[in-house]
Image (spheres, rainbow, N blue to C red):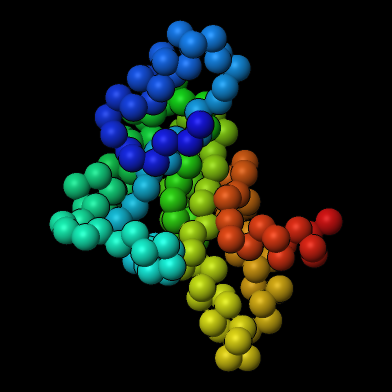
Length: 162
């Protein structure tokens, strides 16, 4: 189960409901530090899910505030999360490394649509080698401390990462 709302208490509530229902072996991977990021724009456009009113600033972590991001991760760990996620990944490698250092749970990193779109656009224009850039990005996320990576590069990377 992977809740993305970053609501206080959601991990504890989900864990309680799962356990009560006999699903004690189901893991929770929370979007623990989901940042207020411009890297989400391609997904919001493609999925037509941009906010119709207001914005998501009230629950997403400001990209300038590393302390708040770690407080959000700690809250999820304290509530019993099995895996924490830092989202987006590339511009937040420092936070992936900090989460890995501080917490004794697996760290997931989500390389979001904007990161993918930047590589695709630059490759299309002939500015970069797409495969080489993808390998470098994924290696940097792993090197920062991610135990797993959720990425739009998954299908292409599966073909060349063996």
